[in-house]
Image 1 (cartoon, rainbow, N blue to C red):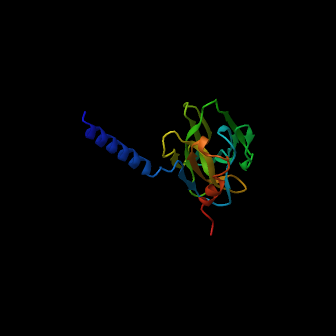
Image 2: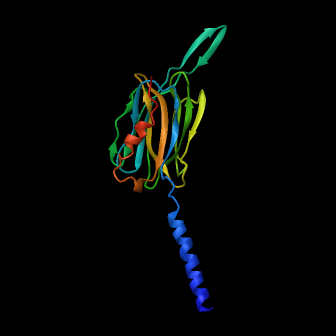
Image 3: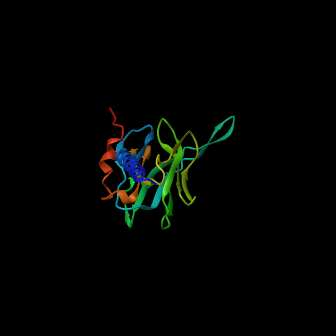
Length: 201
């Protein structure tokens, strides 16, 4: 290959690589907007490292009523939850009331989907946390309006749950996704998470 052709090829490759480096880096974080009625106190989970376990409490207000015939009514809802970051449990958000569901994650296991149902008038009725290994934790009763949260970017995982709760249970919930090794301090995104919680006027 002639000398000038080699030089031209090197120049083209150099300009291409420089152009690639100049491209804006896509935001490594994403937020699944909160669903639910949204009354009460704002919360955002926080901690250092990967989420390694989760606890969810569900309140079961199942009852029968009589109106020409017996009918079954379910008023289950999520009363509270807690996440473990590394070896440290976060505070309980909501209340430790009702039946507790708990799941410990394996090494290299991460939560990659948050789904469930909510009642627009009051509480989160049903919550399902799904991991990259296909395991799930579910609590509550699958009634009312569906929601499904997942990260916008490949390889991201759940970092923060945020929303609101009142004296009885969780009234709204949203999910924040990111990369653990890009966190630096584990609670560095807490302020951003709290800013996404819709204020009550």
